[in-house]
Image 1: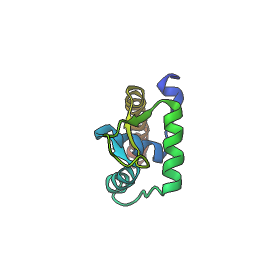
Image 2: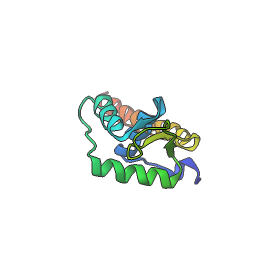
Image 3: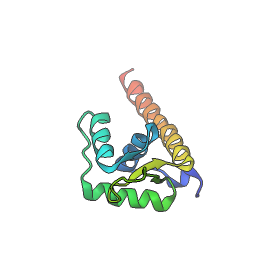
Image 4: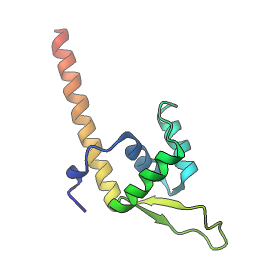
Length: 112
């Protein structure tokens, strides 16, 4: 894997997918629901966008397929975040905190 900072910034869709999977493995529909819930309804990932993003995250090694129980519908795939994915999420959170701090500082200095 590239150093985490080289994989940043994450798109909003990638970020929400990764943090949805941080909690537990999920299938595509579950990821879409979690994303909408976490964003207060602001972010809605459509099926086309979701599966394109999932394929990209799989190729980058940030997520992996989660083994399905025997007898499950083979068309229904579940995904889980990898340790590399968790590292990238942590790096993105640091980056976002830096952005927020810089913005708050600039706004507060302007108010004085």
